Length: 422
Image 1 (cartoon, rainbow, N blue to C red):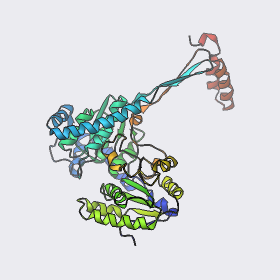
Image 2 (image 1 turned 180 degrees about the vertical axis):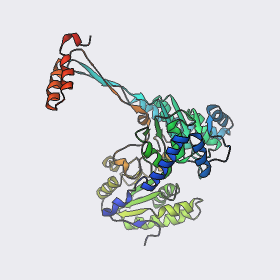
Image 3 (image 1 turned 120 degrees about the vertical axis):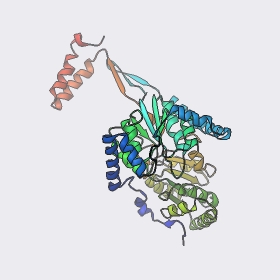
Image 4 (image 1 turned 90 degrees about the vertical axis):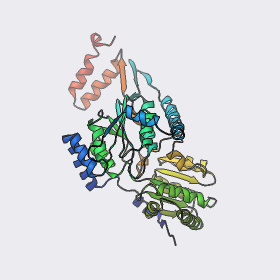
């Protein structure tokens, strides 16, 4: 009998999808956001002190000079580490940006097209407190700068020296030393920083609820829930590596969801034993054990069944421990990021392999992608007609079919050569 992961039937996979925020959390987060909207810095401080992010009199807004100072004081080995990771993230983002081209095509009487234009300002959230996450600072700021965003700030509660240094190295203009829903509100409203058009990055349920509440006033990258990993493994998989990948996500927080799809019960049993061995000296075992209670396993009769189950779950991270991982990857459609083959550890991506580690959770990979250069860009279209005769005639006909006579008349006026574009 399983000790760590509970068995699950394919028809019960729907339970693996969880709402990113509950209605009660959304209501409470909205109250905090609206309080910051109304009372500004005073509300920001009140909530920061209430939730333990701030002590009375603590500085909240740290400017670029403070960030540069943190970078300059960093031990050389830590600075070189950040620089190497930043270079890989920036390199991938550069290639993404170079693949996005402005375009145009000819149409009857003229040309149409689109341009790629960055948002003017962005904010990146990096979780803090229990664990300092400078990697999330790099992941949220570097793609923004590569996209061409003019102004970008970071919010992170109780930032460490390395978090501040990461903000400087990635190109942030400043950092708000506060977290939770109040941090998202401060970035959105420009309480102590420029107001942000777009706010991105992972966070707890309060951060996610605040982003959901503000969506429409600002842009967001998505609604991040607890971390997830799904491992698909065949009988030839190394149980120790499978267990290590599951535990790497389980230690994130007690709400994380580690899951395993295997082609035999024997492999499940071997993985369970490997999990027990690895937990015995894992410093974060307390958190990992709690997260394992959220996890589950499926035994499937074929890899085709594994593909169907995985695409239904649409996991944040998908690790393929199978003989022909490349073939299996080509058959899968819904995931945040896929790790092809047992040597491609998901943890490499968490720490700067190149692709972003801010990914869709809770099944949202069915309809959205992870954070990237594209998140910070818009593609507004344009039209320029020198002879609108053909399109004007069709416009008049269709507008009158819809009963919109002013539309038809606006088109008809363009048939007069006096109103043609020169």
